[in-house]
Image (cartoon, helix red, strand yellow):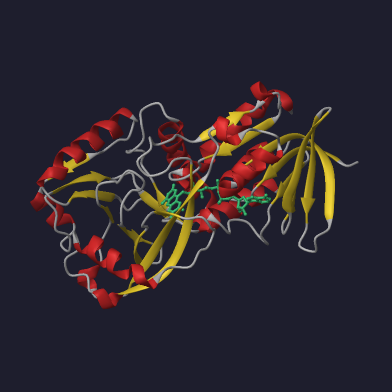
Length: 372
Ligand SMILES: Cc1cc2nc3c(=O)[nH]c(=O)nc-3n(C[C@H](O)[C@H](O)[C@H](O)COP(=O)(O)OP(=O)(O)OC[C@H]3O[C@@H](n4cnc5c(N)ncnc54)[C@H](O)[C@@H]3O)c2cc1C
């Protein structure tokens, strides 16, 4: 039977980054992806924001890997010609009560090592963003945007030096073997193939729970139950009074960063994402949600017109908690202690997973260390 060193399940930005880091040094890798190319799920269905690292609890993987990933991303973008721009962001206070939230966020961001954060008065917000009405703001100069497709293309190219990409192949079996795992995959024609892999990286996004179950992990006990949470976007095709110069966010909610103004590298503007839990993976946008977007964004962008909004796209977050439950950190861990040496699980890789991606790949490599 064919043997490889490393199998990565999932060609989203996290799996691709891990594959890029593990490539080379004579290692043989396989990347298994059920779609016909990389980044067809969360990794291409997001705001493409390079987060500064403000929101996350001190010492969490989200905070550490976001700050490290952000620095790596800006460097990568410059060295590899990946389109990216440090356009900055303002989190706005919708009314006076939100001002203390901004102060808390500033403190938390600084604890996480985010530089340049500055509280803004009502007048300062207006001066920087003449179309925005707010009681105050928190300016983050380190926040930016990146072309996620070009980033993933870069990781794929690096991985290709020693990886085979098994696109259109779904993982259907994962069994502990003598020295590694018996990996079973099924292609688009329904044909099954199996091979042995010393190391397996579960980077399957919303599919990570299923992959962990295939390996025999009790996912409920392990805390790997995925609660898919959808986020839709509406495009803004309006006049100059309906756009902003920077990313503009309201204060975060328990399960999302709030309906914000997203600016892409071509200058296009969107509002989103909203956040609601779903049972099925369906990326259509419900036109009936237009009013929610209009009312939400009008709170700080008063000239926005209802008729300027049209449905755009949606992504699904692989959350590990429901609304009202305590938020969860990224899970990136070796399953050695569950009797599964060489298996690494990535679960709950929601925002800021895109920003953190270069650091996630490096972190996975440290966990794999002894097994390759
Ligand atoms: C609406 C939204 C907005 C976001 N905004 C931002 C942002 O602005 N900035 C930021 O930093 N982060 C953001 N994020 C988070 C970021 O997009 C994710 O953290 C990141 O894309 C996760 O990458 P991933 O590789 O873990 O998952 P995915 O991109 O979902 O990749 C997982 C892959 O695994 C494959 N797979 C699953 N099961 C199997 C199987 N059995 N066999 C084979 N293949 C399988 C899937 O097809 C998929 O391609 C956002 C996310 C969403 C949903």
